[in-house]
Length: 487
Image (cartoon, helix red, strand yellow):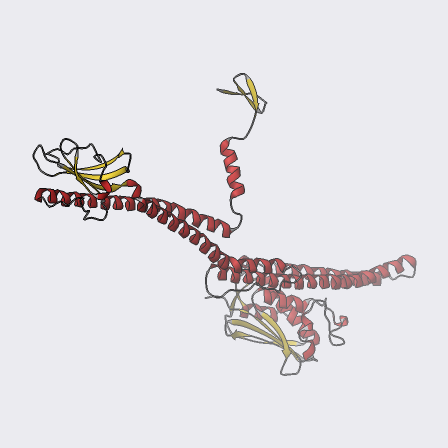
């Protein structure tokens, strides 16, 4: 009995303490863990080999047993046939001296009298004492005997047959030595060699097939390991066909493509953010610098400072700072717009209301199809419309035209003016943040340089687009499109 010692790594066994050692099961598990093949190729080969052994070894044993039984049955049959033939010859009085075997598998033949002396025998059994002491009875005239009583011939298999049913009937012994039965062992060895060859062939074929099958996986692993984050343009080879490895290669390449696109998009976003931060810093620095200059000058010359003019200029700079910050916050809010914030909006009514409330000159003329519905964030659509109208009125000479309608599956808002227009080379640049074209769109005309950028971001956030072109009157023409609402 073992008693665990509290706080000690050992057991009290018969009054002595033995150090704690891992049990046999743990040692076996450790050995199996180290002996287990580490590659899939090795594991599959080992598994197939074990399965082949599990199937072929019992088959070989069964085949050997069946073969030995069949050979034994054939030997007993030969012995019985020879015994029958010899007994018939004795009854007919046609025996020869020596007795000639008529069945090739039974060379040992004796005719033994009831007093146990040999009457006649074959050449191989001449001079030998009776091959067996077994004496068949009248009720059981034939017996199969295997005996090792004879020192001269060793162990033999015999068929013992009474010649006559009378009490004084002689007995015929016919058979062969067991030592000559090497054919059964030959069959067993052949079956064993056959099964061993089959197991080795199964293991070799599995090793070759799995190696060839898994070779593309190794190539994929090698090529994938060579791809780094700085250059994601590499792809792994795609084997032909539509098996698991081919699908794996296509999936890997698809994943690499998505990662590359995500990295490219991330790089563009980071580049835009860096540029945006630089531009925002520059735009904010200008009114801050002006405000600081005015305040420092007033501080140095307080008696010569016109307080009202100073406050007006300072408020102008503060208003500009507030406008820039408000636009920056709106840009951030537009980029994070979700589907849950949208609602059904009648774009025709919305544009008509904004145009009717539009102050100032030049006049805005409107052509609108009725009931053009979109799914949108209304406040953002209003801001985009106002930015486009502000831009058009700021640069128009005499008139601004607004059109609302349907174009395919999109709602289309067109704002045109008759101003100086936008050169074709600058029609994309005007949508960049803090971009103003020289002369025609300078800071003297007002604005933060974010109006058109906000309008395009609103269009993109709603799955649409905003493009700049030329109006029929030669001025600028902006086409704002977003998808129509589902009916």
